[in-house]
Length: 244
Image (cartoon, rainbow, N blue to C red; front, top):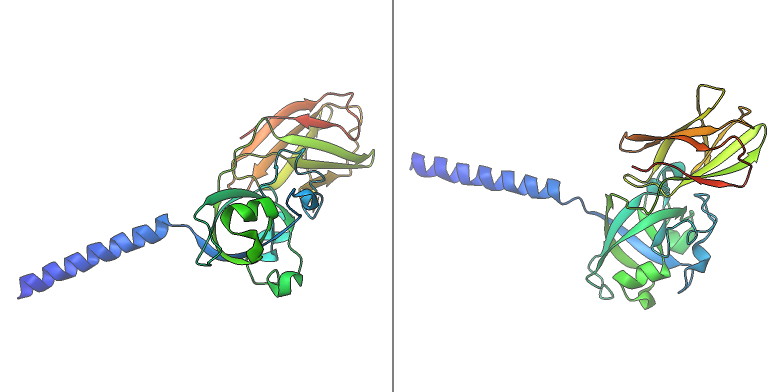
């Protein structure tokens, strides 16, 4: 009797351990989804991340705006999420990956974008791959995943002599940039401040100097692009650096 009880407890212990393992492996979390931008996704350009043209920047139509808890004051811009529809009659069985490129503002879609809701306002082409777009709104499951990008990190230089602003995009790996430093050919490394979205800025005068950048992402990794912009760079240009 005692031996049987011990064996039963051992079996329960193993089963509980397997359950915990399965819970750790399955990283899906609940959310909701709507869509915006029309069938050609043209309405998804611009927005709170600073990406003026998501197509030209390589993000294509598989993009999403996210509600405030995920947006995190723009720090999530560029991150990739795997999503799947969950439990609605309009759901398809597909699993897709989308990039966070905008903020779903408070008060949108009857409050679905209001804090503390986790909400994905997908481009219509993305929504149409996980559910019938006629539904308009579905339950969703999501998990953050690795981003894969073509080419190197891009640095779009804007501003003027006393206000250098750089939009950082096309970032692989974690995708979301948490810190940027710039170095002129006549300076040491200068920490840039986050303006909005993935625009990073400094008041240091760097005109006429070759520029190097170091980019950090949310997983703690960093990559440096040395002399990515030559000394003859000018405002409005975009340069391609190293990649994760």
